[in-house]
Image (tube, rainbow, N blue to C red; front, side, top):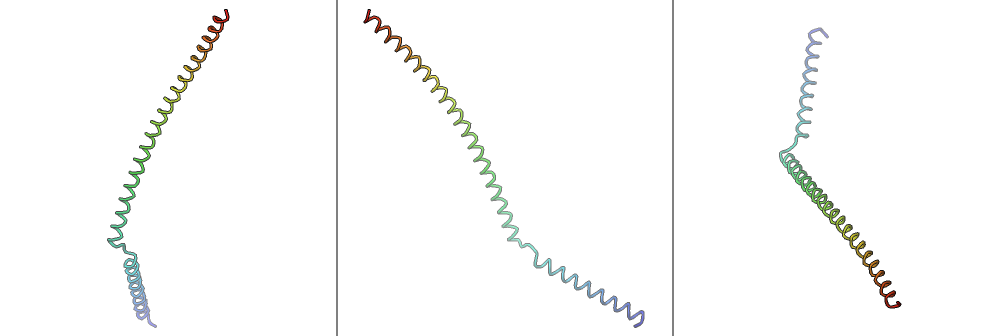
Amino acid sequence: MTRTDFIIATAIILFVAFCMGWFANWLVHRFSRVSQSDVDQLERMSQELHEAEETRDQAITYLQQREAELTNQLAQTEAELSAAMEGLRDARHEAEELRSHIDRMSAG
């Protein structure tokens, strides 16, 4: 094999390798290409996810406000109960004093 034959054979082998690589690249891109319907579906899913996150955030905000209202209402109710119990205690004490006063008046 002469030098010229060797260069030509090497050039042909390199050209065939280049063509095979280009064809393999074309095949990979052809089969892994994303279609427009897939892109549209992903876009719709991302929009739905965004809306769901907004709804979740609104629900969390509502629940926090409701919890604050109920906590406030519970504190008010407990304060009213405490005041009512104090008033009842005073009324019982006063009734007991009146009974003992009436018993002393009727005995004396």
